[in-house]
Image (cartoon, rainbow, N blue to C red):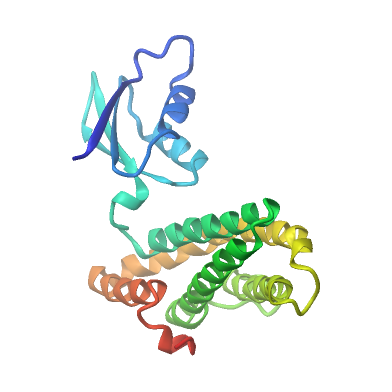
Amino acid sequence: MTDKVRIDLRQRGDLPAHTHAYYRLRELQPGQVFELLVDEPPRLLMESVSLQLRHAIHWRIVQQGPPLWTVRVQAREDVAAESLTELLERDHLVLDSRFADALHKVNAGRLDEAGEDLQAFSRGLRRHLHVENEILAQVFRAPRDPLGQDPTSVMIREHEQILQQLELIEGYFSGELGDVAEVAPFMGMLSGQLAKHETREEQNLFPNWQAALRHAGADSEAQLMDKVIAILAGERDDSLGMG
C-alpha cells in the first residue's frame, strides 16, 4: 500500500516555501507519495528543489490552480524513466551511491565489504561508459572540435581519466599497488572527479542528445532505451566482453 503524506505549503510558519519544501521532500522514501498544496504556480519551486536533491524526486502537477495547485511527488526510482537522458541521470545516482558505500566501508575498516561494493560499482560504471562511448556517441554524431573541446570529446577524454583512476584503486584492492587501507584518498579523488564529470554531461551533453531524440521520434527513442536498459542491467554484457 502506498504511503501518502499531504504537505500544505500555505502552513509553513516563517519559512519560505522553497525551504520548507526542501526540508520535507528530502525525507521522501521509496514507496511514499507526498502531495504538496501550493497557492502559487509551482514549476520554478519544484525545479529548484529537485535540483538541490540531485533530481532524486519525480514530480507532476495533478491539480491546476488558481487558487490551489496540487503536486504529486515520488522517489524517482518509483517512476519509470521518461527519456533516455533521464535513464542515464538515474544511473549516475546509482553509481554514486555504490561508490559512496564502498568509500564509507573503507573508512570504517570494512575492507572486504568495500571490495565487493567496488566490484559492483566497477561493473556498473563500465556498462555505463560503454553505452555512452560505443552506442550513444556513435548514434548522435555531433560535430567535433579539432582542439577536443566539444562535449563529446570532453566526455570521452574524461571517461579515460576516470577508468585510469578506477584501475589504480582496483590495484590497491588486488594487493598489486600497496596496502588497501591506504586507498581512501584515491577514492576521494575519484568521487570528486565523478561528480564534476556527471554535472558536465547532464548540463552540456545530455540536452543535445535529447534534442536529437525528439527530432528522431518516440519510436527511435524507445528502441534505444530498450537496448540501453538491457546493457545497464547486465543483460547484454557479451557486448562488453564481460561474460
